[in-house]
Length: 382
Image (tube, rainbow, N blue to C red; front, top):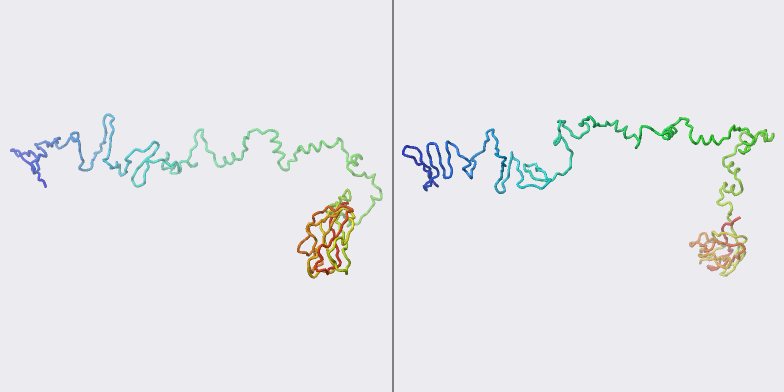
């Protein structure tokens, strides 16, 4: 530890301040303290002479300002990683990029960042008249001399005006609007056309007009018909009136619900054996000629007594060729092909008039069946 020594002059005035090593720290006079390299006179130190001045406490500007002369800059530069702190807010230590803003993290630190471009401009950033509300709310806006604000009623009225509407409507627009109104009794174009089709001086009692309308004059009706009295309950139904009104038999058949008035269902039934003799496998057990042309839809077979076992199979040939891609079968214990597990399939449905028809028994089952019948079903044209 070093000790400071204050040396006095002969007249009692302090002369210098030295440490225990004899190093002079300051020279003293009655009004001046001289330090090595700088002088303090009259109780003050000229800071210009101090190249490394330091504050020993807070700097009180005493209602004055810190200013520069001759347009000089005022530079505040902390050492190293130190911060510039103004009123408790830390400022960035480096410059940002073009277009950035100073933003705060809410904890006393400012930094450069990009604006996010979102949010409303509320009273926090724009409130020129202290309205204390959303600066862009319609209720906060004021009309100018030429700039006007539409009310809700005015906007509704504007919405109801058609596009490209003008103050003047054309005659066609007025005509259309008028004719579209109810109970105006407007004389429309259709009325003009109808009126134009009526002959001049038209007379509903004119014989020519009555005849042209398909009616009879009173003078043309027989007296007996005029006096014909029908029972009070005599009526013609709507269906009866339609039937009476049909022009021909074909139309009447259509009214009566016939699928096709010119086509009728037809069936041909032939026997392939007697009722007592057991049927055996054979070709041509019966034959005949088609009495008319038919469009085949189905072929059936039946027996008087059924086989106990085995499948009874029948084939039909028209014009020398089978018309079945799947033959007609009667299962064991059954008497009709309608209950067969496998249904017959027609391969030829056009059965010409006068063609020879033959029936073959392809399989007799157990040989006990009797009374074979074959039915050809279809439609014929007339």
